[in-house]
Length: 96
Image (cartoon, rainbow, N blue to C red; front, side, top):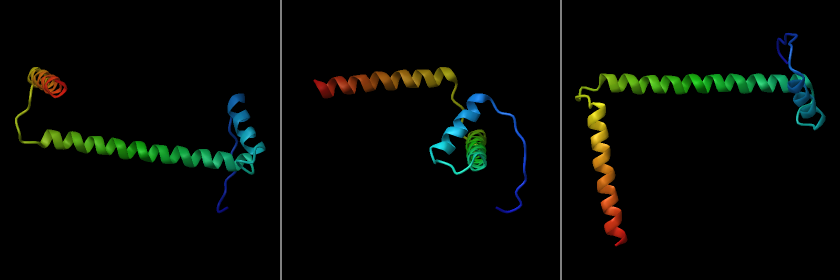
């Protein structure tokens, strides 16, 4: 392992039990290996969160930059109500 640094951490008894059980079951060779895996999972989750957040920000920027006129909440609700009404009629006719 390259440039390993020894650290001391405090964990709850439940967390430590899970780590010990994973070592005892053979899932990991050592508690250190289990902790390194946990940190890798945490790093991956943080990266995925950052990527999702950036994608969301890009969608918001795209929406804000859209030159088309905005639709009010009332207009959107009316459009949705019309759509659902038409969809209901189409299903009734198809079943009928």
